Image: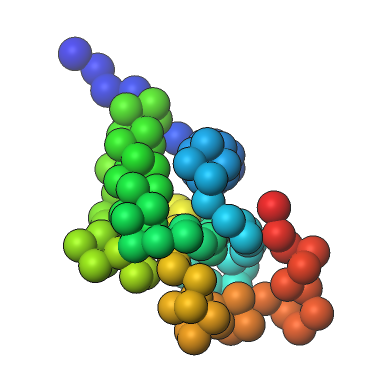
Length: 121
């Protein structure tokens, strides 16, 4: 039995964005990290309306990536549902409740000034 090759970062990103859209994630922002950081090729930040939705978005995303692309993810924070981090190795996804996202303001750390609106998907 042979295993399918793991999807590249662009394929993972497309699958992640589709999954987030399917699950009604809000204010999705994608950040290209290539050449800027060794933590991954892309970062995606989005919001869910409640702790339950945040956890569900993260869980379904991890399931879809595993089933459809053979990508195993590390997940942190799913139990509380305030801020869930999904790490595929190539793409890092942050799913926040809106008030937690506002508090940490990750976009401001990673995007060049003035680029926030342009990076929204």
